[in-house]
Image 1 (cartoon, rainbow, N blue to C red):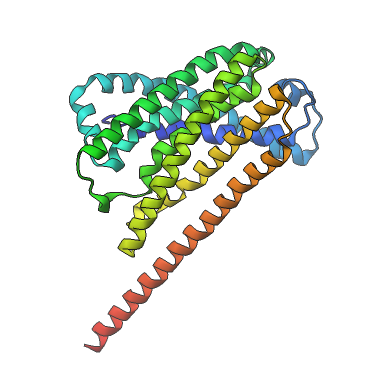
Image 2 (tube, one colour):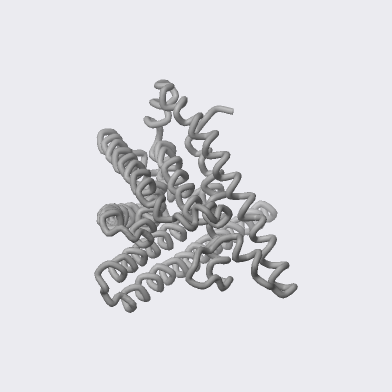
Length: 322
């Protein structure tokens, strides 16, 4: 099968589900102030209901973590070969915006893998969990690499979009994949800022993340406003296969909200700022936007199908009368 950067959606999805399972277990299981590892689970006494819930969840997290790491290694090799194939690379990058935007998927996926290493991998390898601080500097270097590639690719594509006329009729919410990548990359950066005990490492990660998040928010507001304008102007929904792209706003708002929340944790840890109110507002504001957008999108799609079926029935009635 011909390689495309969109292939990285597989490890991205696997890593996302593994990370959700990890966070659920982290919040649900008591583990004290020490490391959160599989050894804590093995030493705990669970009821039958907890055993039925938690152990399958751990098995799913393990399977998806392995899938994420293995598939990323395979796809990175293919990606490198693809980048050196000038013909395929140029054809992809010179395509319509909803195609070339797919170049951000590998960056988002690699960032997800970094989050998986800091989360599920350390859960299954207690030695890594107990030496978490030794991962901070390599993590910061990897984050810097991802951020550099993200900004360089954004500038490259912006030049392409501004240098040639855009067919705005083909723009849809897939065009926000770069914003999604900004959210995921900065989830890694703010994680380092919040977890690192080294002030230089955490401050570097926090400063870089805040600047990149600011760029991401600007891109989100600008692109989303333009897409909504095009939607209103067209007075119609996108084709049915593209409609699920409406919901890309959901992970974007969650990622940005949680990343800003982690910056407040950094401020609290290293500067002793009282950020309880700010943290509360950031998390809840992002989830209010998320829930509001889900309701809005569902109503939009529901109204569209109601009108579609109404038009179909009306057309059928007309034909029967004729």
